[in-house]
Amino acid sequence: MAIFSNDSLKQKHVLITGATGGIGYETAKVLAGMGARLTVTGRNEEKLLELKRELIPLSGKENIFVKTADLTDQASREELVESSAKALGFINGLVNSAGIGGGGVVEELDEETVERVMDVNFKSTLFLTQLVYRRMLEQKEGDIVNLSSLSGLRGTHGNTAYAASKFAVIGWTQSMALEAIEHNIRVNAVCPGYVETEMAWNSIRKKAEKNGISFEEGMKEAAAAIPSGRISTTEEVANTIAFLLTDAARNIVGESLKISGGNFMR
Image (cartoon, rainbow, N blue to C red; front, side, top):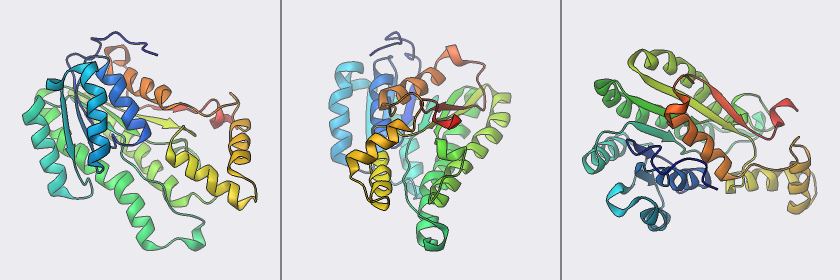
């Protein structure tokens, strides 16, 4: 369902990381329908090309740039930003959607897993943002939306590594927002609860197995635990991200918007 005009972001060139994941993929489609020029990146080239085919009718071939990248590698990050700006011009919008799950209870954690989760969800995202932010500073313009999680606002059982990485995103978002707004650059975060993505299905499946029930029963339990009675859709998260990139959100700074059907209150 389109809730924004088709030219709401016509002055924006937005770089979306993690565009092959459920939320990033849907965000790209929503932003394309709002007139944005888009750079979409991820590791899965086949999925990126599939996304490109869906975006072209919405935005036009000339407004879409696709590039695979390994965000954990500095050279790859630099090449992504440089080639993106060369293809579509100044990047004045950034959506940091790339992320992974992982970890377990504290006594089972290993250093490699923790480093991987923190690297992808926090460190790599921070340093990619730094590259884009330096260019935004030159123009005194930009909007950045980081994808955190409800797990970045509260701890949950067996979720130490992932929660730590998402708490880090919130702290970074708030601190950077204070610096960036002095230069007319806004930084915010969104904090989804369960969303209809593979990451959520995997989490629910893991919990169901632990409790000795089927995945279907686990899905029903997960939905029943949410005050709204259902899991969020990727489109609902994408629409929230889109709103934060529009002029309608000009005075929203350093916020962490929850999309959880009221689950944060449980």
